[in-house]
Image (cartoon, rainbow, N blue to C red; front, side, top):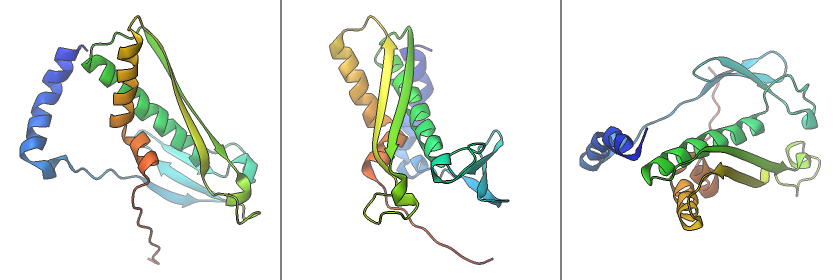
Length: 168
């Protein structure tokens, strides 16, 4: 897909959202069910995956770790966003890799140290691209990728989260 094809694809969508702002607000959903042991079956849309404890908190390592899944979601979103932006601003990419890594202190999640944070202390997202584009275009690519990546912006901004528990 080139820039003109991308613009043609997105133009009617953008026009609709300009004239009908409420149409742009979409609710994405994720569902899971509690499984045997300390695990949760997560419906991914393509399959059902089993998530469990990370080995650093007592897990077997056979189940998916939700922290890994968060980083994978960041890599997926950032990679798609980078490709879309590169296409839109006509930066040819020969190849590329996207990686994310994050540092966790498991003392927090295990309640070993009440001052230890629960969650990632730091996340590093990296793009390695093969291109002939000049550095100023790559700087623009990175800036726009950060701006439009939903998962990156969600992690960075920390949205309001409403949590509830009910007996059914």
